[in-house]
Length: 262
Image (tube, rainbow, N blue to C red; front, side, top):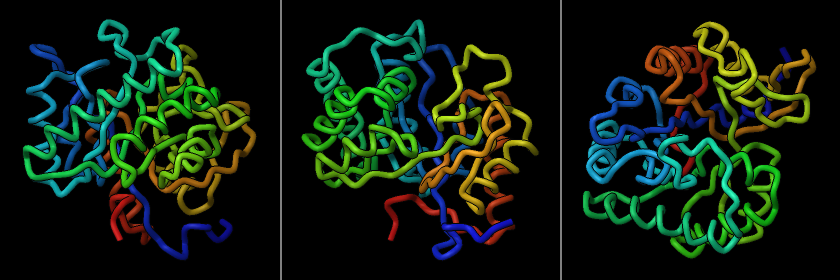
């Protein structure tokens, strides 16, 4: 295995989408997952979550020394924010600003502050390929707080837009999602593109962090340079996946820290 670009710093952030339960409906096992991660992307009550879940999740993150981020998405509870909406850039900007403000406000009430913003689902995927959407998201984040870190897919439009807006950005890789040869995420609608085998997931993450590559759906090798790795809270067995990923990284000598930690 070739020497990693990360081997100098030997650190990575492990993030997870959290707080996605709604009223009587429970999605994910946040209590079990939280101790294994370093950054939490907390639903803002639009694609998932509600005010009580939001506050509870912020408190849970604080109790586990996990950095807090806002996870804004399209207003689509039924589709869990995974269906693309025909929104103008101005509407996207307002929608993201509104959601970031909600999480920041509750965090401030609890004596905490936001570290980052990571768009959710269809909004994230649209921003990966659409410069206007990426720019709208970046403007909203900058308007809310220029110290926030914008998470985006490694090599995507979102990172470029964030830099152009004067934001710090963090390139993201995905532990439990398959990649296309061009470095984009394979659609969830394709069979086998959400990976829930713990050993396979751990091997993929170790390769991403120590080798800077991932195997694509066609067997080719894709270069991937990431500062943060995502495991989805609603993936089957997410608590076991997160714990195994953390253990595997630590055994490999990689330190896990929030991306905003010095």
